[in-house]
Length: 297
Image (cartoon, rainbow, N blue to C red):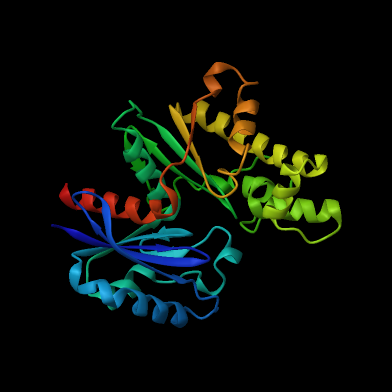
């Protein structure tokens, strides 16, 4: 049995798991909170503590991480998202800890691949987009049945696609990125300005569910922007399906609102919309599956 040590690094938690590469099932799993320190050495120490109990049972390490993985280095279009961890030598650090061959990819790319392989046994899908609408907005692309990672790791970073040229300035340096217009963070920021009180995106969404018309307009504005993005990418990439995930994407009615705005567009702009099914371990399982496949070729 070939076993992979899969690692999922996010803004709030780091998960590690032993994954059976033949069945793509988790054997054992552990999770810690992501250190909020600005010191890279603190993250390295946390990773070492988390991973060491698993090292002797694994053949290689597969990492799914927030941010851009550019030749093994963790970086970001929006440096504010990673703080002191920007330009963190992720692959080298974990390879030093584990002494195992180590590979890394973006977490949304990993989740996209897991969603794709979960769908394809029963569907004839060549081109698929995965969108996670959560604290931020991320994505992953499968084109001609192949996951797109890109030479610099940025393929699928749709959160920094401009949907409103007159919109607010994004941390990446552009104006009106969809992450700044439609993400959970954006929903909270817009709601806080409108209600003149500090609100999180979750709190604004709850107000919308309770019937507050102003909050509902904010949610509709977010869903309309995501629908516009889907339409643009569908006509560009000839998408068959779009999988929607993330805490906002999977919130009550949100996917229905996206579909509602897509239905107003001509048929060529309307791919099949699917709710994500893979849950919190999509990054772990997607990275393990992708890098196991790469090794077998």
